[in-house]
Image (cartoon, rainbow, N blue to C red):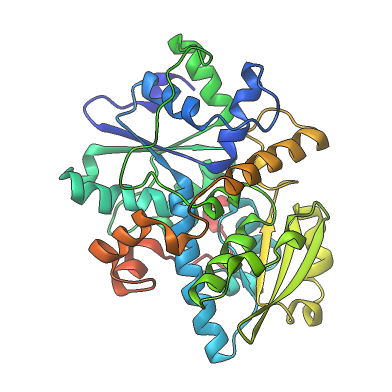
Length: 360
């Protein structure tokens, strides 16, 4: 992939950055594994020529807001359960091909990448008075399968494709070399406004267990429960299957975390066991997105360091949950109305294929 394949002349070039990339790109330039390098990543993208750089973790916060509303509705209605996360395209494809009967259980909100892309070509475009057709929407991802996800037509809305191009962490390093951008010397920059502020919870989406923790944390916050009393540490382990039940103000919410697809059949084939969970998080790659196929090579030690890097970012974040994020509040107040509103459903939600015919 060359820089001319990524940047489009005559358009506003906008890129979003997945949470896992900020703790991995630096490894290619001598930083210890897991070192957060968010400002450097944004600075590198600005140096390449991108006009706006946004945070996919903002999209993760939106996903959590929409998931929380769906979870609340299903708890009130008594099901159906479980619901599966939609953020990992490898897991979605796996369900579509191997367990099509479970596809209706995937949450309808798109992945954080697709949500961010959709908001770039709707909310951002409207605020900046730019026609969606004049925006080149690029995503910097830790995952090769995100390239396939970007081509799936069920993520389009109103004839608009949310993401035009996907590049991986390793591909970014090659682009920086092509352009002569020195990672070590580049000026650190902050994400741009509108889609640039994320909660700590939104940034742990890159680790196995992070999606579940972000959702449980937000749901507890909305119910007025003190976050300091919410023990989500069991979700942070590295075991292939992890489960935990939370008492959230009298409501019991059971979570299953599936770390790596090789561990999925043991849980998915046991229908009786599966039925006891409210939320199932499944990530295709070991460790979650920090171990994605578009990342620098990893070992168990580097995976753990990357995970610790993301949780370190979360520990230092002032905003802990999606519902506290001021830019999320502004998005809903000025544009979407509320989670699962008609407008939110039209722009941010989809229906997954029972079998992914165009990817088969």
